[in-house]
Image (cartoon, rainbow over all chains, first blue to last red; front, side):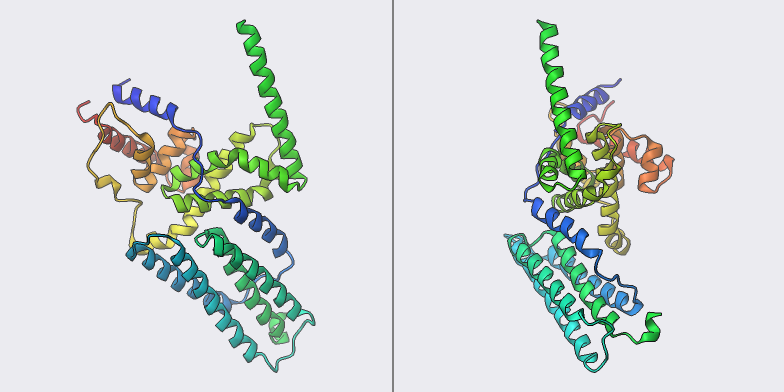
Length: 166
Length: 191
């Protein structure tokens, strides 16, 4: 065995077994676990147009975020994360309002869809509150996007013509 | 004296394992406090592995969260035939690799990035002064992942090839590449 191999083996043996994360991860994990329980009651998206819109939005937001991260030298990460949350929320609100206007006169397939929408609003608010304290938490950002997507899916689904629901 | 010391250590190990098993069973039954204790006990290990695989602090922390979110659902699959830490390392490696694929896939495809450009850095170390952790995160992505999984986590190349969706020969080649770079960075240029 060469000197290099000996030293490498020794260094591998001495490597630290643990490395603590720099931020508190538990809060996001707890929300993620609760979200797993909640998602079972929310209809899943299977609408091609919506999926395409969601993918486009995600791509634009991701590209913008990636660009910002590459070009800026932030003293703190908070402004970038908060800007992303704000951008996501604004885009979602515009999309949601546009759909609600579009379906103003369309009959809804279920009676309690507005209550479901309000529950999802509450979930989004809780996630945004958590993001205020931890703006760059990727798991929370993904959860927020999922809740937004569930709202869009809900609106589309309850207002879709009957022939599309067969 | 030696025998007495060993008995005390064995008793402590048995107690620790029994305590851990109780936490696992409580978490499997839905006890979040017990799960929190398991998290506190293992977050350092999970994050260390995620960090070595991703070489990115933020990505490693996100992956660690993802591991513990998915682990809550997967806990029922743990059957106590193997050590919990061994099973957890396996779950962590798989989820982190999958997470990296999801998070970075499109960026890599779009910009044709193969990990970091660290390979082109000049060697800074000498044979007597080595920070292996720092060198590992400087390795190019595929070489780093293979090195971490094979040299640190003890996976066979066949398992790594399956996990990383590459040929067995590629896994061996990437491991060789990683060792070659480490050797150079550690100042062993003349052997």
